Length: 185
Image (cartoon, rainbow, N blue to C red; front, top):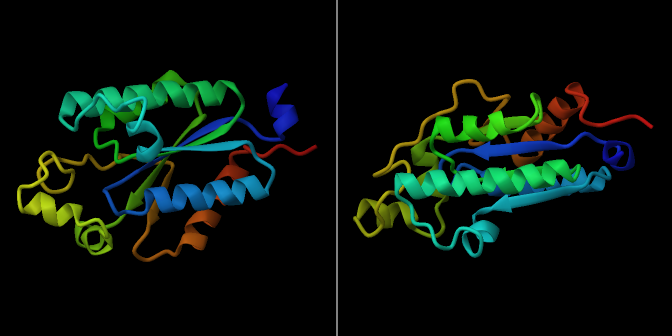
């Protein structure tokens, strides 16, 4: 019933990549585009999760895993409500991303890897987080003192240093069309 009303299937679009790779920028640009197309959407990112639901968590491996588990649970609720939920989290571990994928119906989880080199991400870092991490002021910082596990086979890989925001959004929308996420009347 919700698919018919919304005119689209529910999905989790899971952006992953290093800090500064373009996840949040693309998530909100995609949400805007999907909203203009009449889709029911919501973006989950560090700002709206870490200030409330996960404010008790740090950035060690266990806390990162728990954070992703919580995000997966919230994303599942949006999925059940018939929304296209867009998440923008580093989510550094393959196993955690796979855990969320395995919680939902096959095909509803779409992993989007924002592939940008560490040097590009550092150049984009307006908050100076990489610099602080390199100076030892921030511990467990992904890409510097904490590992990031590149996705083995994401549904979509975006090369955000070479592709502009519009091209990346178009690539995602095209993928969603091919996967029949958008329904005809």
